[in-house]
Length: 178
Image 1 (tube, helix red, strand yellow):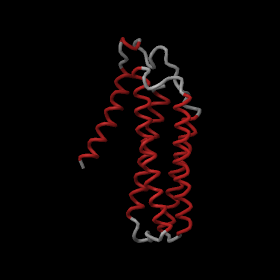
Image 2: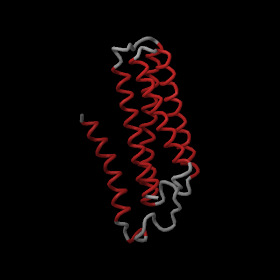
Image 3: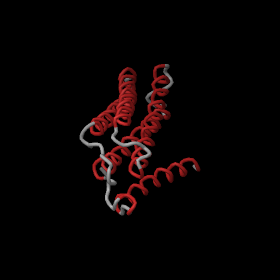
């Protein structure tokens, strides 16, 4: 429980710093947001594609969930495999976006908050992908049935949480904050 509360506070503090900086920009950054000299990323390029990819992964994991409830093992494997593939693709695109960004993590408050918020989320995408990869391995080896698949359910819930947080990040960081 302590770990969950700790990470919730860490993530909350990143959002708090972002909202504080955007709603009340200090004199040190020119009293404007984004700070003077920062060229932001367009929300309608790679971030939009990543949003579509992550939402698609939510659809494929939901299909896998429905398939396991119906006892359709092959469809469960295909849906989970597609979701893991989408997670990998999301991570690769985010890495490309980081490499191509016109600012870095050391470009003041904007760079720090951008990379901490999106990077923390990206870390959770990687963890979720590994979680689902383990579930995929277990499904292939007949560890799950239509009645006993709690581990898979936990992976699905985690993945949907990652999707919802990304929607918030996309709206707040890329559209509103950029």
